[in-house]
Amino acid sequence: MSAKPNSLPGQIFAFLSSFGLAITVLSFLLLITFLGTLAQKEMGLLDSQRLYFDSWWLIHDVNLGGTLIPLPLPGGGLLMVVLFVNMLCGAVIRLRKGWRTIGVLISHVAIMFMLVAGFVSFLYKTEGAMPLFEGQASDQYQSYHDRIIEIHRFDASGKADDKALVIPMKHFTDLEPGKARTFFAKDLPFEIQVTGYRRNANVTQAEEGDKTGIDGYRVQSVKNAKEDEANVSAVEISVKPKEGAEQKAILWERAFEPFTVKLGGNSYAISLSRMKWKLPFAIRLNDFVRELHPGTMKAKKYTSHVTKISSGKEEPKVVTMNVPVRDQGFVVYQASFSQSTNGEQSVFTVASNPSDQWPLWSCVAVAAGLIIHFLMHLIRFLSRSMKPKVVA
Image 1 (cartoon, one colour):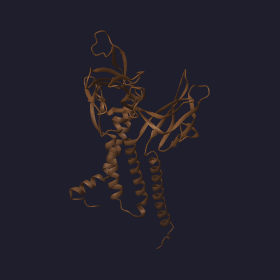
Image 2: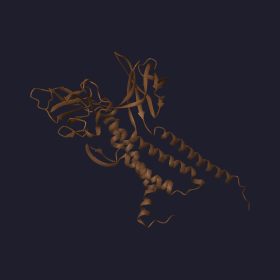
Image 3: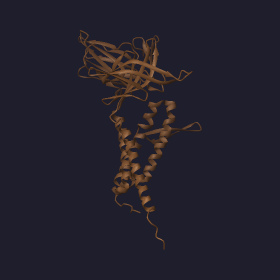
Image 4: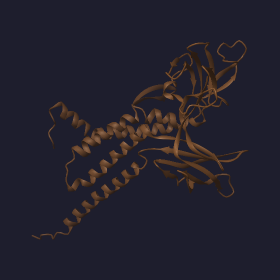
């Protein structure tokens, strides 16, 4: 039994590398996974993920006989960081190095690599939808969750600038009614004051005498949908030019046209929309096939026959739910479909994730480490059992 360290750094290292800390962290991970999974039924996948798994800490309300008791808990983000440090200290630095422990070392380093993959994915992954009708092609996909206020400038001839001015979602999602923030840029001849953001809303006709209405319309909040893709956001803005009268408007995701301001011979189109990203290639949908289970309307398989267009070269591909198209760090999955008077529309999920394959490599390394560890134990067991027994 090793002596207890006397120095403060030694005691901290002993705590961070202890089995007790590992068991505590894993127990909390099990608890928040259970609570977060149950919460998906009430608040939806996105909100549950943000509250329980992406956070450093959280407050979970426990219902005891109709009384809600707030229970503070560590979030998934904090637990993952502590688990990484615990494995680094206890399973890498503190572990006795040698041939007997090489398999255990490989497995633990691979698990740490998997945690790093999750952190990289959290920071840099983009994911969105690309719906296509048969015969339609696109090289863009739009976010499921991230909204932006986008400003395009047009000159007198109607020609638009190559780049739009963008206000990211993180700068206005906290601007509930009664709270405002002003944005400006050196390229704009006006300031924009943003207020009254609603994550899910309708725009309705304002009643006579309603002072909250804008141009005869008002924003009506709607209960948030469980799936964030179904929410339709709205926000109120005030355009304040350096010279001239202030103009107010409602920006709504379902608006047919952007709000337009004309100043100094230029026109500025302002809209609220989903964040969009551009692919280094285009996808054209040639044919969409939906297979049903016999005698039901339940889908058995979705198949999209597409053409990948890159640098003028066309390459036929088949996309299903389990067979995506991968190219240049992007992955195109078959997500769903819709049907309207315009025909069948195939909906693809497009993801860009630098750590896309890291979990697979980690699982392979974990398996290799465990196999090495078990084989070494087996060899030592067989070598001991094959030694001749000495009879007295």
